[in-house]
Image 1 (cartoon, one colour):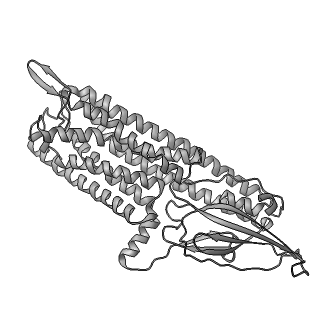
Image 2 (cartoon, helix red, strand yellow):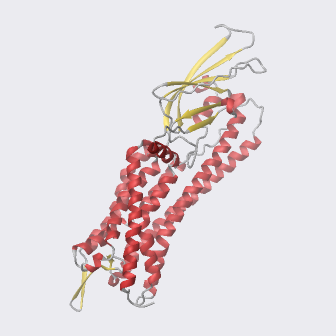
Image 3 (cartoon, one colour):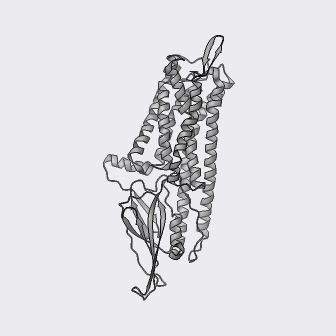
Length: 453
């Protein structure tokens, strides 16, 4: 371990920085192209990844310059521009990760919907790009003189132009310190939300195992486990109930009433038509059916079971969907955790080593930093794909020229005879999508039309 970097080591750093920068640029390109080309990618979390991609692209422009900025001269426009970009946009990626965690918090604890989340996106933009812009801009003009020599804040940082060694304390105070505060805050939100998710999951499992199977009493409202990594669509629903006593027919033997409500479900293609009919009288001689008309551009008629038959089935469905949502959350939060650690731990260790041993140069630590720091866009692309697998599959089939339909099964009756299949790309239950009984649907099935009116 020497005190200076050798020409061979400089060459290795240059190749690594440029290769990893290209990987990130390809990932950012995929995010931007798919987001703009299909609405199936417009989940709340993906919208934030989309905004973060522009900062990643600008960061990778600076990392592609690599050590050429240093070679051009520490006071050159290229070196100063590179340092400014790295100081402003590289930490902004961690702020976008915090914004995604804030969306999770608002979804779980403040019950924000997709439209409410969109209304605060401009605040995220100002925060994530505005906050780091202030010190980055100020550092362009700050300098000090020692023994008649000028020392700018932006200068030689070994891997590229950034905060120079003479201002080493600012590397921690204005970069790594704030980044780690943001990382710890992000992790705290995910841990807290994860704890609440698994608490609800435990309640749902307990409710499922203790619920009375043949009871006709309205059940306690189950806690609905929302998934912050999926988007929902509001659809107009008209519910008509019909009760007919055995042996009686015609208008005199029936009683009809209707109510209206809003139902939030995952994306459903408006043109899809779904029908199901299974009108067998029960042992009591009643026709125990609800006729549900879903209006989303076209009318669709669906029959679902009444309260007495649906309560245990809804319990089973809700418990299953709780497991799906919990697993989806765990997986995505885990990848966020890994991406943050891989990106920031090696470079942070390198920075601490530099503070403890200011006269020594550790090439393995510096090389590892040059490997992981430009990969922010690549990691964002991986997370983007994982939260959009159904849409990615549909896009892939479309690219291959195959007609692809992703079946989504909404289990209402507990088996294939009591189910409805909805066709539409991006509506699969795979990889992060969670389809469970909404609270509004549960209320409609377990309450009489008069109570809902």
